[in-house]
Length: 113
Length: 117
Image (cartoon, rainbow over all chains, first blue to last red; front, side, top):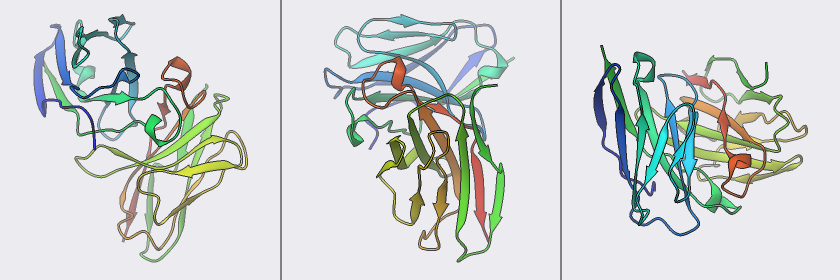
């Protein structure tokens, strides 16, 4: 089972920031938070990941709470092409099956003009 | 261009036939993975391989088989024993498997949509 909880769907106006929340209250100390997104009928696309510090790259920012029980993915200026299902995944940093990505149902983000 | 390719994009087969899905990567990645996605659902891991000539079962391996004879190739065979083979199949690769850092971030191919009639 997925170890994260995300809202089923969200809307965002084009050009505004999209803030996607994720709860992972049972996360352990060595587990990272990963974000992927999947545009309809395509393979998932890696966005960003982090352990406990906030992270930023050319696509998004990841804000992780101090207790690490939740995080927020921020798309600073959403465009119509950002419409997709966004997956929040917690993943161990060791091998074997515990290191696998476990995808839940994600959040369907709809960016509207 | 570097990347992961899966072919074909759409595949139709009759019930009871085995079918092999292709996955090739030219990223020089050691690890490769196969996932299955059903409508409205997340991805589920079928098989993974950390290195050539080695592979392990994922969460839903029954009815599937794989081989890893070359670093760049990880074909998946959907056998007649798989009870519900119609699904979207995704292949992924990463530089290496354990660690949680950038080197084991998984990158996905475009997928193959298999329909069994």
